[in-house]
Image (cartoon, rainbow, N blue to C red):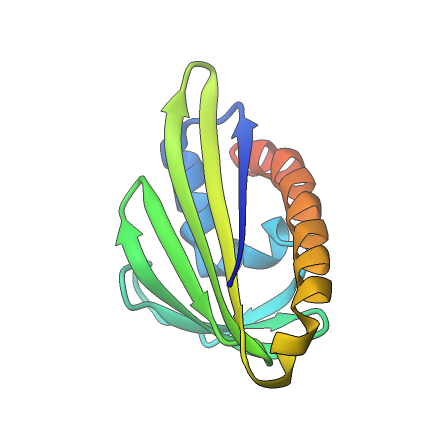
Length: 143
């Protein structure tokens, strides 16, 4: 299993950050790998919310919110080709803004197991790009 933790601080209140990151419709704004979202259910985001995201390199992927603590924690469980991807965000208020702790875990399956070192490298690059995007778009979205 690949585990890649990361931390980003933004000058935005925690409740705004959580609302933004947990809303399926905003995924293409903050994730450089998300191209579009579809099949978003009506109503508020909650535990069990399911939708689909078209991702670069993977095509359409199913997303399930399988952890949800309003205002604090959300985890996306995804099924890209070659494995299972989990992305957990823990949102904490800090002086002057919010700390976004996030963890990406990928469990390669099938032939993807053989490519784990390459997958790890590209996943680390993806997280570095994601962190830059979060720092850029989260404050702008809160205005």
